Amino acid sequence: MTATGTLSPSRTTATAVRVLRQLRHDPRTIALMLLVPCVMLFLLRYVFDGSARTFDTIGASLLGIFPLITMFLVTSIATLRERTSGTLERLLAMPLGKADLIAGYALAFGAVAVVQSVLATGLAVWVLDLDVTGSPWLLLLVALLDALLGTALGLFVSAFAASEFQAVQFMPAVIFPQLLLCGLFTPRDAMHPVLEALSDVLPMSYAVDGMNEVLHHTDLTTAFLRDITIVTACALLVLTLGAATLKRRTA
Image (cartoon, rainbow, N blue to C red):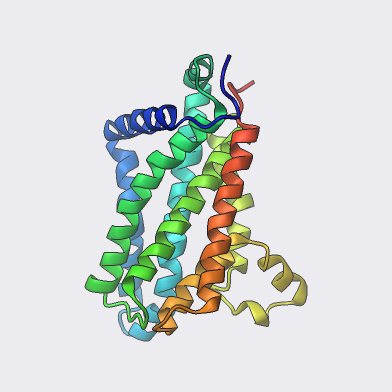
């Protein structure tokens, strides 16, 4: 019998350790998760080399978006690989519930997300001179929550893909609409009312709003607390849905 509904700390931790050991032997994946967001921020800074104000305007938003996207891609493909290789089926035949597996993956990739967020935030603030009115630690907090949200979304969509190619195809469906409607390109309140209403239910909108709150305010604001609460709640909700929809194998 597998414990499908009971979360075991020991089994969850064992799963996380196993995933981290696998990642240690995959330097390309580690580079994708840790270095790509930093490289993108670096390139962005010097694309706007003549206009530091432009980088200050959108740099904080992209500091939240880049980790979300990379964690979504890596997590969805890694989880799918476990299922297509038969590893997931063997694991679930043991006393390991779906909740343990999802929580273990979230814990492992969450640990990577911490490192990723520290590197990207440190680069943006202390190397690329991103002008932040609020605390850089709050910027780091939002970047970390955004990366965890990307991890949760990746775990969730992997249940609906039959191949790694299909997992990548979910990016236009799941990520691109959020990217267009999150307020990065135009203020959300300036959009058509239908699009504004749609953006209000997309978690990336609150990820960008949270970054902008830190960018422009020295103190914690009600809006900032609302934004990080919504991002956190969405990540937990998606992780719960991921555990409920997880398949043992790909048909």
